[in-house]
Each structure stands twice: as structure tokens, then as C-alpha cells.
Length: 431
Image 1: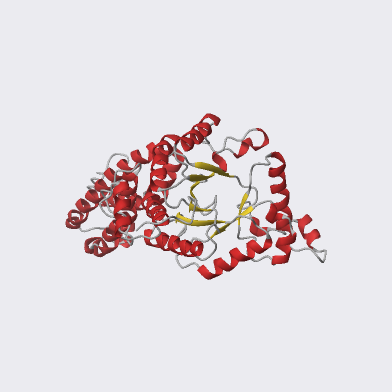
Image 2: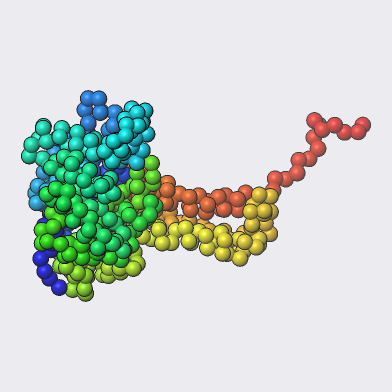
């Protein structure tokens, strides 16, 4: 299967608001991005940018240094990846609460004003500021705040002459015809160029550990249909988003190494115009994996790509850790029958039952402790300490702590009782 792709630009999104990769890992993964068919990066810097002056307080503890930013840009250039920086001016600054401030409320009381108008005036102000300082730069904007605005209002706002909208949709069953109609609306309003945004991870659940590849492939098939339904150059390019958190307050979703097989499959699908057995084989070959199971997370022994050991271990944890601990605590007849919460609370157990429970629990703990040590070491090579700590605390510690608590209770119950104290001189006795 081959054919020219309708997407001249194919940008991989790096969302740095969670688990930002070390520069050393980026240096390994950028050549793979290029080999897979990407030719650009959308870098959402968030608090990893080394801001100075009044914005310095935004810096994360492990923010990249100015020299590391230069190194990232240099590495991108070496791999022919054009960098588009994504800096929050509006999008994730709680845009849904637009118009709720005191000054905005007063402004909205005037008859001809609306939140749509307020949104457009702010976009125009920011985009004009960018254009005034850097005439060669074209700002892109996520399109969700524009979709439902009346056509005449959008056309008259001056915004279409200043920005290019990015139409985003991460669903597996996106409405192709609806997207084509939306593109036609934007064109009529005067937007000269349009972009698409799909997802290769970070779009199917805030605590997802490994992306469901089938979902993401279907999302890209739909986007190919959208691109094929309009004029040849109707979309400038596509941003393959890889969200790392749903917002700053949510948990981590799929780590970048865990998303690589999904990214590879989606990029190759876009380049080849579909995903048949040949394309699948090419992806497996590029990643050094035996099988890209579309409906199943990649099994252990997963590949030779940078971070493939992280994917293999994360997959083991997400598929089996909690379920194996559940099986022992809730499915083992000796635990449920002879060492229930009631027994544990009161430190009661038939001595013989200790031997039916303890070895299995110790064995399970040892097995997982070894794997987790390996995972922790692998994560430390790719990520900063805070991300490693957060991922393990969220995904590993709760299950291990349940296991350790069972063993602790067992050890307290099965410890030999203290000998009774014999009456001594300090004990009152009858004369």
C-alpha cells in the first residue's frame, strides 16, 4: 500500500506538563520520529521552559535550562523536524470560564456584546501582538472556541487574517462530513490555511497506561477521509497529539515510550494511506517488535526502540499487578476463608493457615519487587525524579502496599506469644 499523503506537515506533539523526557531521551527518539515519517514537532513547553523575569516563578523544579532548550532545537534540526512552540496564552488558562470576571460581566451587559465576541477580541489582541513583534510568525489556534461562532461574526472579527485554526478531534468515530462542513465554514470566513489534530495517546482516559492502538488508528483513518473529501491542499498538515495529562491537576496518562508503537502505526498509516499487513510489517520492523497487536497492548519482549523496556514493564504492571494482588486477597480461598479483614483486625488465624498464605504472598511480592526495581531504573534514564516518583506512587505502590500489609498482619499473628509474667515482689500478694 503506498500513495502520497494529503498531510504535507506531520507534527508529533510533546506535552511537557507531565513526565517531560530528559534531553538524552529526546536525542534517541527524534531520529525514530523522523524515520517513522514525522517532519515536525509541536512542543508544548508548559512549566519546562526556563522563563526569566516575572514569569520565572512558573518554572518547574526540573525545567530545561536555556542550553538544554538550544540542544533540543539543535537535535530537532539535525533530524529535519520543524519545531512549532506551543505557549499557553489562553487555551488551558481556563478558557471555559470566559466572561465570568467582574470586568467581563460588565462588558457583556452591553447589548451587542457576547462571550464569542470577547473570545475573538482577545485572540485578535494576542495574535496582533505576535505579528507586530515577529511579522514572519503565523500563530495557530485550537479551533474549539471558534466552531460554534456565527459565520458573520467570525468573518468580521479580523481573526481569520491573523491565525490558522487547528481542527482537533481525537475520537475513533469522528464525523467526517461534519468536519468537511466546518472546514468549508472556516474557508468562507477567510481563514487561508487549516490544520488537523489527531491523537496517538492521551485521549482515551486520564489514567490510561498504554494506548489502545486500534482506537488511534481509526481516528487517523477518519482524518484521512476528511482530507480526501476537500481540495487537495485543504489541510496544511496534521498534529498527532500525545497528551501527558488532561490538565495540570490530573494524573499522568500514557508515558511517551508507551505511546511509541501507536505513534509509529498512525504516522505510517498517514504516509501510506491505510494500514494493511505490509504497513503493519513495516512498523514492526522499524520498532523491532515481533507483533503490533492492534487490540491488545504490546506484550513483553517489546522491541528495540528507545524506551521499549519501559513499555514492556509498564504493560506488565498495567495488565497484571493489581489483578494478581486482587487474586490473592480476594480470590484465594485461604485468605478469604481464614484471614478475612475480621481476622486481621483481631489478629486471629489458625496456625496451619499461615503456611497456606505466607509463601504465596512472599513469592508475589518478590516477583513484583524485582520487576518494579527494573522499571524504576529504566524510568530514571528517561525521566526526572518527580515523574518517576509520581508514576510509581500512582500505579505501583497501592497494590504493593496491600500485599505488604497482608504480610505484616500475618507476621504479627504468627509471632510466638510472649511468656506470661510470673508474680514478682512488686505484685501485691496475700500475706
